[in-house]
Amino acid sequence: MKNVMVCSNCGNENPYYSLNCTKCNSFLRSKVSNIDLWETTWRLFDAPIKAAEKIIHSDTKNFLLTILFFVCVKYSLNATIIHNAFNENSIPFSFTSRGIIYGSLPIVVILIFFSLIITLINKLFGIKSRFKDNFSLYTYSFIPQIFGLVILTPIQYALFGEYWFLFNPSPMIIKPMVSVFLFIIEGLLFLWSTVLFITAAYSQTKNKNYSIITGISLAIIISFALYLTTLVK
Image 1 (cartoon, rainbow, N blue to C red):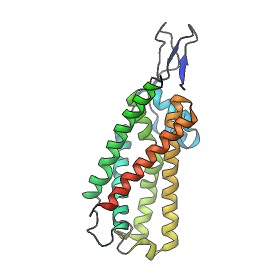
Image 2 (image 1 turned 180 degrees about the vertical axis):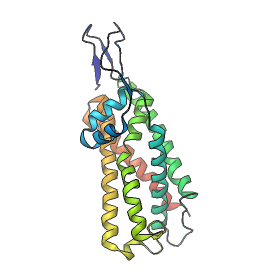
Image 3 (image 1 turned 180 degrees about the horizontal axis):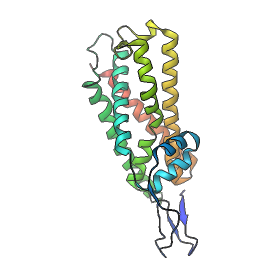
Image 4 (image 1 turned 90 degrees about the horizontal axis):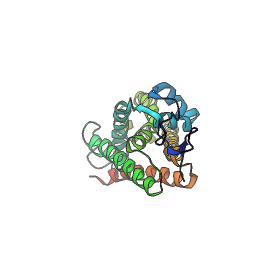
């Protein structure tokens, strides 16, 4: 269970992220200095395995902090919406305070620890992977949801105003069919991120079962973290 770079000069197996052979120092692949954001974003939808390869092989994991910032904004909103939807009689979450605490902070912690755990598990299976590659792969996997943040959130606010976030009254009461449609799109974007979580592991292991288990596990952990916001009073 591993994806390696085989040196054409000496036949030595090298970690998938390698640029030079560890035995004879021959070049194993073309050098990738930076990540092309727009090309990578397109490939995440069109050819996710190719996008994962570029992220792994890139020397500089650029745009990572920018993407992580938008992920934090998205999950601050998610925490705000989910808490207020299930706690109509309690004090509503504010996006700029409790939403950040219960949304963005947990997602960053989950990403760091999950990437670290996957790196260690890969090592146990004899797969040499790097924490920075795993962290970058999982962070870039949230781009479909960032699309939702940039495109859907303005539409949601235009149609429902602050009620989309406060659920007082619920958007399901104001415009039921439109609300259901928007929630379905949000769900599909999260589903695509889950596919990319799976791709992140598959690009380095080429093992379908392992990749599906790890990808779905991360999606469940994130969903559970959001569920916990419903228990906050």
